[in-house]
Length: 140
Image (tube, rainbow, N blue to C red; front, side, top):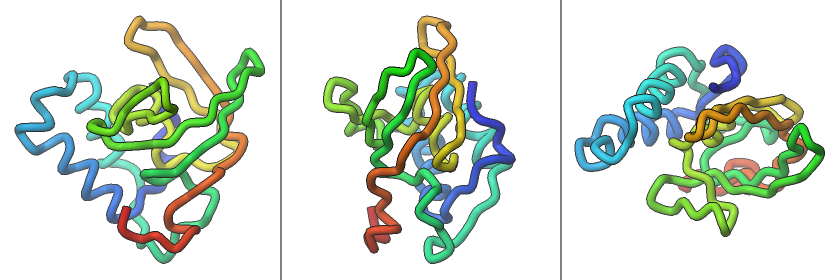
């Protein structure tokens, strides 16, 4: 479903927030078992780095990305928290299959995910248009 977790890096803040999303009863109740398991796998295996050590080529929460799909179409999306998700506006939940495949990945990396209808997809992260840490916003 996701990029191999050894290819991912998580900031300490993203790690803490993702952990909170899948362990708080109120938010976890709305999640599928697959989403919780996939998020837990990332949390368990992706190295954690300090915010000040994040390079601009790593996808973090609230990053805006330009993706190139295998059919050569482009998507511009922003990785967001579930409450802010709105696919029509390009806001993709971190707990969606696409969001989980992106978090912690790097610009230039190819990611794969399985949509809820069981269709396999893949895309390349062409550009990180905006990354909060690179912009000096260490709190989003």
